[in-house]
Amino acid sequence: MNMKATASTAAALAFALVNAGAQAQVNPTDPQPTCTMCPGTYIPLAELESYTKKAIAEKLVDQQVRDIDIGKSNIGIGMVHRGRLEKPAPNSVAEHDQISEVYHIISESGTLAGTGHWFTRIDDHIDYLMIRIDPDKVTPLKSEAQSKEYLSKPARWGN
Image (cartoon, rainbow, N blue to C red):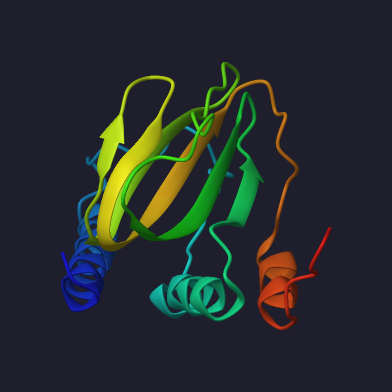
């Protein structure tokens, strides 16, 4: 999937959501939200692309875009860029029992293995959006303002 397809898909989804909201207002018998302050988080495609550009320019991999407290859990959104990989590095398996991850591949491909997981091969590169479900709230929160501040400065080397 290329970035243009992702942008088109996001635009279509946004239109569908706005259109559904307009229909709900026209027909008051439609189901209504179960809460009055149901928060939603919008992350513009340009912001996600900025994370990928920063990753390439500064040789970064996993960058947290947002981490949001949704009540009973935190939800983290990260952008990941990984370069070419012929074979996995020794002892490079990622294992964690407090956070679950969902990957949405944005460009290129790779081979991911197991529950203890690692990439065993990446032909050129892979960029993906990572959603972290964090019921124990072990990851720090990160707001839109913190994200913009992070993107405005070079990464701190050695920290």
